[in-house]
Length: 378
Length: 254
Image (cartoon, rainbow over all chains, first blue to last red; front, side, top):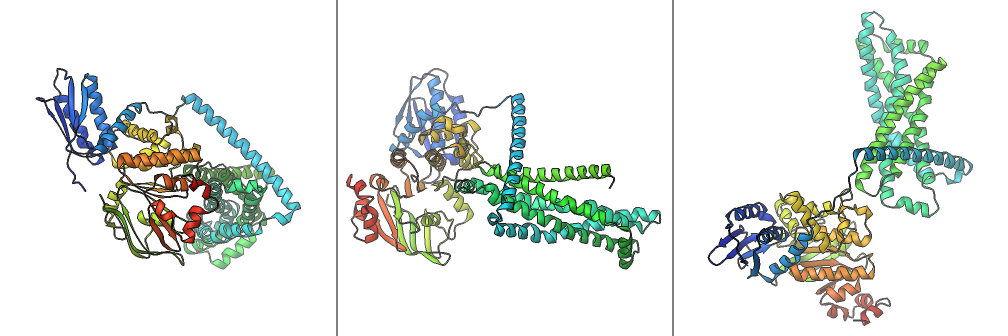
């Protein structure tokens, strides 16, 4: 193996010879750059008719080296100097001949067309509208397929359904429980501080029940599930799409919605309310602990008052929202998964969109529920 | 120039509970085009993965450019990675980059050349493998199978490797593309004095461009030598490979 020798470019004016020596390769690219700069400055002003390029001592040459040689050639050509190669190794000469001619064709690099901003804006808008349109079709397909499955329950994918129930439901118990518990503690602490100023310690029970049962537990649970399972749905369906598994299903005459979407949707509609019940319990439990320690409200008294003042309505309203959230999470997650195109970036961007859109819709629907309920005076 | 670029010494490979190779010995010489052939599951791609250090043999030693792949330091591996170019079976182009960016990628990583130089060099390789200029701004998902292989080959060539590993370069291509890709590979070897190791199923490729053939089967190297020599081996697996009903016609032509 030849040793690494720094490249040199040496011009002897007496016999009009230009010597290339050393390694003209990637390793010495900065040196090559300097050499060319130097050479440009030292080149005599008067025109030289012909230069003999000597390559006997050129030990290595690669494409990066030929790129610099090409620069050299073009420089000499612009001064109407003829170049003759002399003494190069056969392989080096072959590489030079192969590369230099082609490299001159390569100066015009095709650039992707960039749109003016107004056109880009219009395109993006159209694309969003198109996505909404496709989403509506998708929702329609879900309904249609759900009705079909209701009449043909034999086609339901029980195994996948159970699988999703386990992954999205059972395995989410610890994290939803813990977060809800912590939220309960924080809420009780903040409310407790205020209530204590007015000597209204006992009302912490009413406030805790109202906020946790009606708002926090359903919302926190839905957001966690959107992050855990909505994203998983998108990534799963997305990689299946890339792997052409979705196409394979379709060509077998099996509807991807029936086989892949409905079980996920249905499992989440079952799992999310159950998780919310669990989150309700732990949220209230967190509140109980905090109330006990800073407001001196004993567990037994907390439960007694809870029983007396909290109407069933609050609990039910909280739970009624959750199947709606589940539908939102699963349909958005699956829809985004099926929108994935054939590249790795696409999986990432659609997963992000799936989670962001799901959380956005959860909060929007929560607000809509509040408006609706206040309008109905419940 | 008879130095060995790659050496396998008593290499035993186990995947799961299955022995893939049982004490394999092989030496690949510089400047040759070597084909690795054999039935499905005979461990052809596994052999390539061992050369690349992506898979460690259970026992035995694999050396590449005199580096022991089992105990290679990070720095030496980096050196190696500038010396070899790999064409993976499915191309393995980065799907989020354009073809030109894909080809540029290794050079971009190791070089401080200005952007236009990188692009020119990448475009050079693109033309070298016979792709049209317009392919440069396309994404891999927009390319046909043949173009994908060519683009992946261009990426493998960007650092002017000494060793080129091709995992089924012509599988899934139409006969015309196979011929032109074969010629391209042969030209590259003649011009740049590359060592080329490829896994192939194409009998035409074997006869036309390879110097030696490694026949894998029954967990060992059944034969290693010139195609003409290997083809006359009476071992039933080899015989069927070359003179199976499907191939009689093809090989009679040569």
